[in-house]
Picture 1 (tube, rainbow, N blue to C red):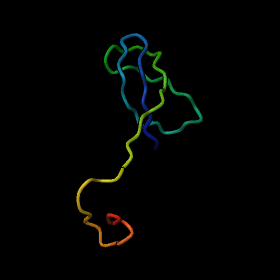
Picture 2: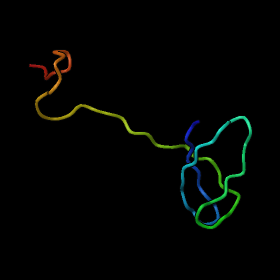
Picture 3: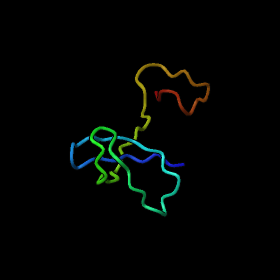
Length: 66
């Protein structure tokens, strides 16, 4: 089940819901005000970037260069 992020236009609350199927567009009620006009929004996601400091990996390709 995918996790979608929604925003309520009535109270501006952002919240997440597990949705069983993306084919049918279920009405998602806002947990704060109960409004039923919530719209799915584009979620931001985290990425893992390079860390500073010495590498703790045993793979030499992941270690510092130079």
